[in-house]
Image (cartoon, rainbow, N blue to C red; front, side, top):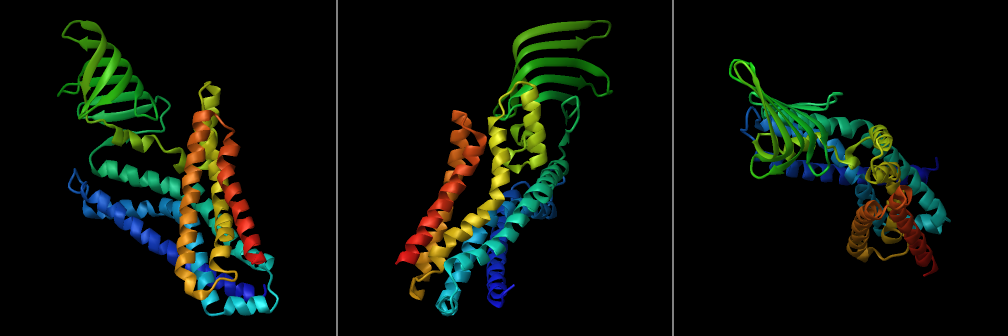
Length: 357
């Protein structure tokens, strides 16, 4: 590698890592503040809240990596411009294409890191964080069982076949035991919807009550069931598609397809997961016309602000196209790729315009 490329890579990598660490510290602090209100519930203590914030750090790193690449590249290029180092390199014959090639090499490493974190580190760490929080609060949640979800609620055991994305339950079976651990009643319901503050409205209910010498069966169109089970607990099991690994997304979309269910939302999440690491390349392309090129050094603040706002717009459009794709049943690949392609084309036009000035 040429000397200038090693120097450029060192400056860029240092700036990007510094920005990423600053973001991680900030978001870990916010996560910790959000957990303070839960301290004291059951066995949940301050060190558990700190552990929760730390376990969420890999997921935060995955989310923040592209914006850290953008801001870090902007800062590094602005410093090089202010010290006239970039000007000297250009005067020595360094073309924009060669400079962009050097930026892409560094961005490629961060794109690989983004993929590895999002696929192998963040999903299990986030799952462990929520499981730890539930355990220390005294809630027991069983998952990964073929018979569905099992939850213990005082002297009752609840089996749920399906948990829908809007926190509705389907295929509910409640086993109620008395203080002597003897089965007292079995309640089955087709569907349940949470009703504030601590109840569920069950529909198509069949309740079997075990009496001393006989069993009594009651059928009800609707029943109000009080339980500590709530959507916050279910959120642990209803993993957001964006938090899933590619392997789990692929398996789940296949499951939906095999059961003739709509999988557009998960298909889009799959392709977003594929494309997302490449956003680092888009970000360095966006940073070049703002942070480098032929701008005057006294406009560093304006350049960085404009670049950051461009990055925020990228994230907004990324979310917008995902939602529109899910609502309108667009091609999942097209919905996931379009924002990145549009911004990459915008970066190319901006670089061309800066070169023509």
